[in-house]
Length: 171
Image (cartoon, rainbow, N blue to C red; front, side, top):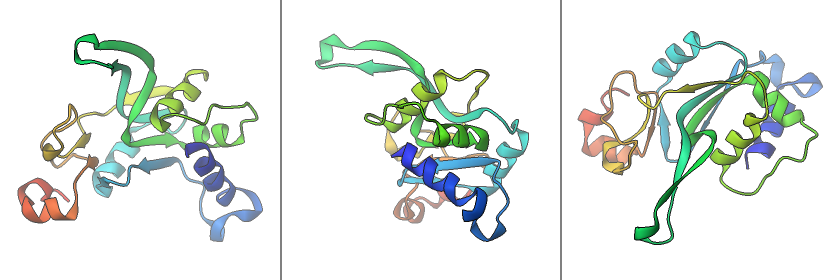
């Protein structure tokens, strides 16, 4: 899904197809459909980042693989941001969308993006797991309490915010 999305967004923001004279973006934020974003903290993060060759998210560089409980193993991978959400600098979006190389397009989007970027020089990876996290009720290794600096929160549904306003009060 990512490559067609990058190509579509790039085609709408470049050249004669440019939407209503919109400025060229500096970053692209991609979110899982179960993630919420807080715009104020996102703006604060983006203002502190370099504007080129940037990849931001809850970064991983290994996966736990198991077919059976007793056969668990950890496999090293290319660095990638977990699927709850990530930020890419616009130059990387353009590079990937305009690439003529036959990029692999089947598999997990988050892992594929890490694989595509691994072949590029000088990509700066920013692991912001402390602000790109899961809602406490998600019960994953990324689950943590919401806080004023939270940027992306996976599983912060409207129902959870209504049930637990203490968690979503930072929205």
